[in-house]
Image (spheres, helix red, strand yellow):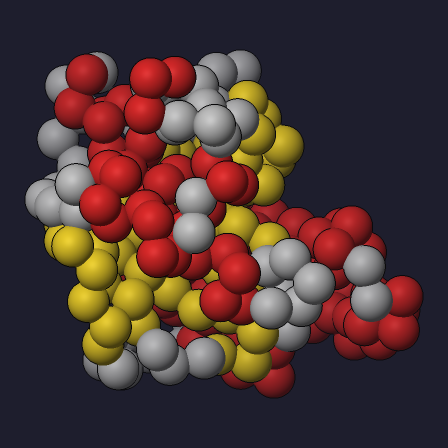
Length: 199
């Protein structure tokens, strides 16, 4: 079993977490300004990504530029991993590749303190990514506990590139924010991401 085999129906019981849906979990987070480079990149590339319509195109042309902007704003204080294997507990199915991981550590050669997991929604279906995202968040939490990283909350993101939805894991409770954020509000998306990384 691996991360992508968990479903929203199975993940809670399998990993011992309770799942609660919430609305406007991040309503108090303000949008942040972002670079002209990201504005231009999204203006040029998002129409191509949306026209192609594949996970790969959305990942390369929309998701990655937004996450690189986040890394730039933290001036090399964080690290960003794409398509990395993240094996934490094979017995519980917490193995496999993560679409993206964001760490509070600047170390880019290996994963040290994961705080945000990002899952690309399959077939443009946000809900299809919930199980995988929760499993990756639990893995990140357990990894941090073993490494004695004092990180009170781990966050998750499920995105199609054009739609973004956020989750939060504290102790054994996963809050799923039912609010969807759209690409035309990238300042708000970045604001939430920055909040998640800063803790």
